[in-house]
Image: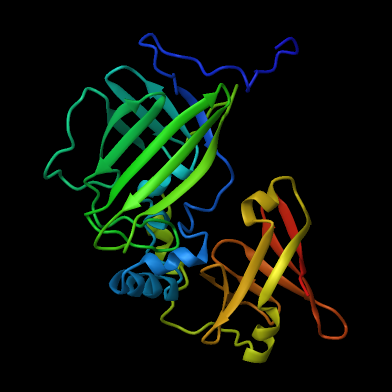
Length: 314
């Protein structure tokens, strides 16, 4: 535009073959799907009992075995993190900020009947009008659906639908199907924003295995024991009050703490007590604020960029 800034609402560009050009650096709208693929608690019921048992065991171990923690690929949840798309008529490459990549074959080949299982799977794509449809199978079962620990089997099938609605925005719908894990498909929709005049930084993971022995495991009890009556006071809903720009997008406008079997949770993250008011969630440090009368008034969630404060709802 005249001020030198990109016009993010301009029409979507098209490639030489007339298809929408989805090339560029893209950043999904702030989301926690890569950390916990279940953002609506009602969706937790779609997991089969065996899969739910695996998930609960991983949570009880504070997700100590998460592949990403050990410098292994995130798996299908990579699509919820920033990436660059490089488009050609026969293959589309997706380069992730983590340094990993995917190839989407656009030459009309079918999915293989018996692919060699891999972390990223085997992807083919085609156009349905102006929507890029990508189908992926051939995942190994070592990957997790998210950092928290939801499992999947080698039967996992992922369908992604990319629709570039204008120069700066794309709609993404991801559908996960796994008959050995789910009772029905799980579908996730979000907006992906074009990251103009930007680039990714080099990323190298090298410390995961070396530091793994220092991670807290669920086999031992926390050193600090907080009485159940105090934990019960913290359970409830809290509304965003103030924080750095974007903090409520990361944590949510409203957050809820629950108490189950003597364990306090933020979403599905178990809180490890460091004192009666300070906890570690494995995601961010959590501090509850108690007034002189003993009532819980606030909770503070800390990030490197700054704190976010939430007021206790009545």
